[in-house]
Length: 175
Image (cartoon, rainbow, N blue to C red):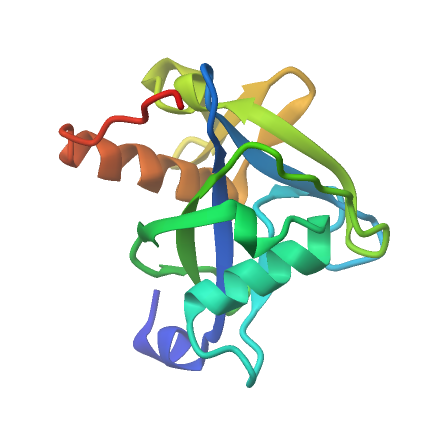
């Protein structure tokens, strides 16, 4: 990706919400057909507003707007490095542990459905498939039930997986 694309990229953030429990899950959403990238599976998030003082603020605000998940139920664990998209976004992934007792509801203007996918499967390399489009071009995808994660979102999942592998002392314990 060129420096020009990186320099012009719009700042955005997503929350990678890990739901605590005996079998931790990760929340993802299916975007409505009414908005850009309709039908795609993604993390809650969006473009940074002038009122947002950080990527964390953007991720938490967008999560509240999209799925009504209140920030009081999210313990922010940290951020992954920026991810640049071909569509012109610089995404900062924010990792958050979602505490028990949370409630959520999809905003029908933005989210068609909310899914919880297995963190255990996300952290298993065999869960990812490389789909070849041409002999020299392929993309990874993650499948679980009727959920197919691809594009930037699967790249962020792989980034989470790689980060946890590098920091093997990190353990997600059941609460």
